[in-house]
Every structure is written in structure tokens, then in C-alpha cells.
Image 1 (cartoon, helix red, strand yellow):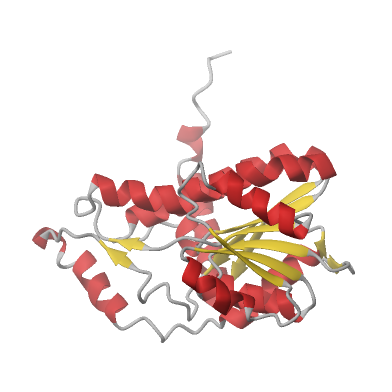
Image 2: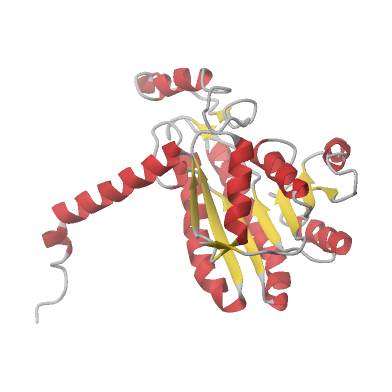
Length: 284
């Protein structure tokens, strides 16, 4: 891995009002790059733009789930900045609850934000990246995109979808010189487990011993996570500047442990069923 010197870059980061989005915007601005950041409400623009007295921060109102509004927001960003070098899909939220507890509306909404919101911004930016023959897409996934976790099956599913999309997209875009990186954080002290976290409205008593325990754990989790968002932001910038950049960037010792355990579990499962798995071709 080699860090490559780059001139001032222009980043488009979704969801810069808090969490990873804000920490990354602060770090990017601190190194002299420019940021076009999306927020949900116009009232949030002033606070974001005040992060850069030099005018390097420009706020755009955007709901990433609005597929008709996204192209206009990207066009505004390009009109203001002239180009986009890095797209960071950070906007998203957690949804907890057993599969039986989560309603169709709740499940579809988390996919609209976490998955289709990511698709919407990528589709709007890709023609620009292809035409210029460069660009970098950074998609915020999670350790929940690597493993299944009881009590948040739909959130895990939305992040697994981002993982599959990103891996395929990296192959599609390689001929155009466009990179894709998946960021897979563990527990970080953002607002994920605070006001951003949503629980299913329905509560099924049958899951008291499983999902009920997770509800109890999560009620004390916010503000206790060991991960530092500022250090996560520095790591993301390092990955974007690397040559070649990584496809996956787990963040945090807990995330590294999840990856190692997942790989070991896959290997164990493969070995245990290797004979059965390998005996399905037509007889020669």
C-alpha cells in the first residue's frame, strides 16, 4: 500500500450533519480538500458551511431516497464545484427488531435509505466519473454487512446488499479507472445507537429472550463504543489516497475480529461439506 500525493480533491459526502459523515468532512476540510455535503434540512446548511471559513464546504439539501431529486442535487454539486473526485455514501440508519416484528413499511424504508439511496447517488455520479476516466466511490457498510446479527435482520440485509453491489460495481468500473471501497465499521461513538437508531413498532413476546436482550444491551450502548470517528475518518482518507485502494476497509479491532471469525467459519463449513458440495456434476 502506497500513499500517493494528490492535489486538492473534491468530495461529495452524503449525511454530513453528524456521525461518520461529519467526522469525515471535518478531516477532509482540514487537509485542504473541498466538500459538497448533503443534509436533510436547509436549516443544517449554515452549520455545515461554517466548518470552512474559506468556503470549501458547500451544503446541498438532499433526501437520498428521492430518486428524482438526486440527479438535480448532483448537478448542483457539479455546477458549484466543477467536478467530483470522491463520492462517499454515508447516509443511512439502523433498524432493529426480529424479522416477525418488523413491518413491510419499516423494512422497505431501511432498504430505500441504506441500499437504494446509495444506488441513486452512484447512478447520478457515474456518467461524470466514466467521462473523466477516474473517480472513487466509498460506500459505508458495516460489520452487519459481513455477518447476520439476531435482532437486526433487515439492517444486516440492507448492508449485505451494499456489499454485493459494491463488489460487482468494482468489477464493472475497473475499465474506466473508477475505484470502489467498502468501509465496514464496528462499534464507533456516533449517533448510530442514539437518535438515529430505529426499533420495530411491534414487539413479539416470543422473542423476549433473544431480541429482548439485544434491546436491553442497545439501551446502554450509545456513548460507550470504543471506536473514535475521527480516527475512522483518517483511515478512510488514507484508503482513498492509497495505490491501489482497498476494496474493503474494516474499521476497529472488533471489525477485524468479525472478519477473521467469518473467514474461519466459512472455511470450517466448506471443509465439513466439501465432499457433498463437490459431488453435483454429471457423471463422466
